[in-house]
Image (cartoon, rainbow, N blue to C red; front, top):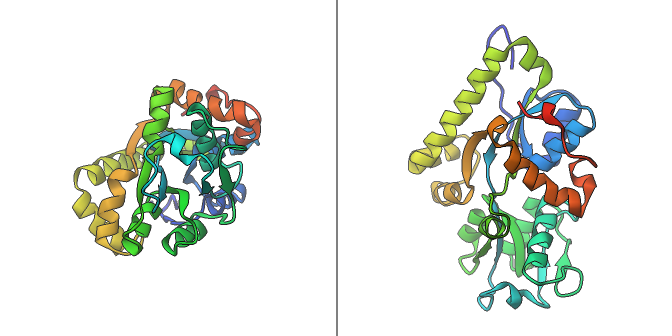
Length: 269
């Protein structure tokens, strides 16, 4: 943002790693990124605080295989997952184990397509029969290939096991802005909170704006993606227990994914 003009520039990027680069070079005042990545950056000493969790799970097991009705049906199947060791991979591995499957022996996890875009294109083209995909890529693929469908809602499956939703996406703010202009921070946080509520309440109108601003290519895809994205803007300070419960799963599986330690209380704004 620019303080004198009170203008806001918004960058919409394809992959979380691009957002991370903006954190590393200090060009982002506010950012949306995976909450595990936010924890890593905080633990590395970057001065950003967690303001809210706006997205509560966008991941689905997805594909054209109509024979899969339960987790046991995945045995000996090849399932494509982007980015070994990142959130989709570890979350899916956790759910496999909780449902009686060894991810290293009972199924084949394939990491041939390392980004959301690569993987969604492969699924749409039929090169990947089963995949862990995120909205809005799920809705984009269905638009291109009507034979594909959501098999498991991994967010619901996580909730069954953990009793709490997937605190997947973080909204973070730079510490020096919090100190220098807390009123501006509150205005932006409140605006985001109202915007998420409006999108969920009026998805058809929101879809038109999503297309207008080049976020998604058509209204049908946008309308489909909105409910599947599980947007609910909740301020971090009031849900610290839920966030820590989410982090604890990944810390136990691979401490590196949250920066080798649980973020301390100063992480939460």
